[in-house]
Image (cartoon, rainbow, N blue to C red; front, side, top):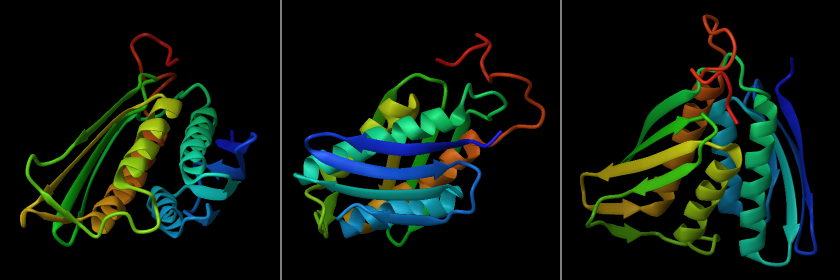
Length: 200
């Protein structure tokens, strides 16, 4: 069975179309109107071996980013089907210069998003062409909500200073790796990976 889904959302605010294949080769064609988000989603696709196409237009930056996370999450959930045979859990740790980003996921149908960062850290190189780092975190939050997953993100910086461009690159790479692991088929598994016998 092909684990794929079409992506489409047309409202008074946005027009988003595309497709997602979980068992791909990491190929992507992405045009959201924001170079940094295109780059992050390309990294996500490449390292997760997901084939992803996205084209988005809209009235406000916030609406485009929010709706993209919604439709991508729903497409991922749909492509998983009933989740039979998947490993369910995934974890990845990705270093990038001064940063070590760690991402843990559980595709168990329950939503939670945790962003755990050092108490005292100086952030540099913020914002780029995406409104704010908070908007990027909102993207991850909405993605987790619409997939139905626990998403835990944490990072370390030995220098006490964080280049947020490096941070989000590392996070999206780790997210792709972790979701690839969690959505992969475990040959020993028969049925849904839950003692309940169902993943909602």
